[in-house]
Length: 276
Image: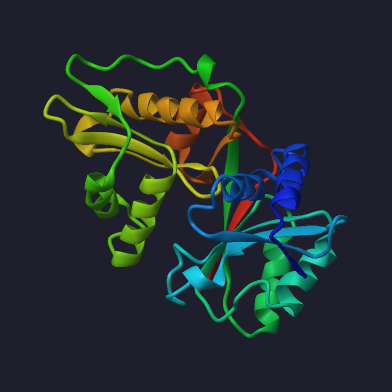
């Protein structure tokens, strides 16, 4: 197991991962952000170099101050050899099993191998499958127009409480810190109404995922989220990020919205592993 810290090697890894998109899309996004200032303090683990079989991204130890913080303790995984991945998560300290964490993967085998590791350590792991949607060109996404007095804007620190209160997986201090970091360091987009109040928004996270799309209930049904999401995608696209998002299997409304915007659903499922 190696911590890949050399800037040249990290740039080389980014290029290698980009050639295998979309299978590598989550770890690729993490490596992109590490190579662009590493604003949230992540690092890259490989089983070997330069002929690697596994890439794992994780938070640097110095930023993990709360073992229960599942928003900070997040991993992304990609493998070329499933047994090598299984050994990495089971037989090394690449993953801190004493912490609550999320682990993202876009390949079959990751759930089972990670569950094998959890079983060996006599701890719990849950897995939630997702559809992975990718967008090749946001310029082809046709959306409606904003009403007079409404305008697009990036988000700022004054918006954190609203996002935290409306996020079903938030509403706590850990989630508030997480959202504040995402807004501070990564592209975001929102719509302000005539009074200057935020009514719809979307963020990009540390993996380059388009996420946290939301419109206040009283403003729904007018296409605002599509306008917001496209604006975010345009920012990410110009910065060189692949465009993608995850949708849980039973969220049919979001699936239809993404497909209407030109996103393509991949046939292979992606997985969110949660250890508590």
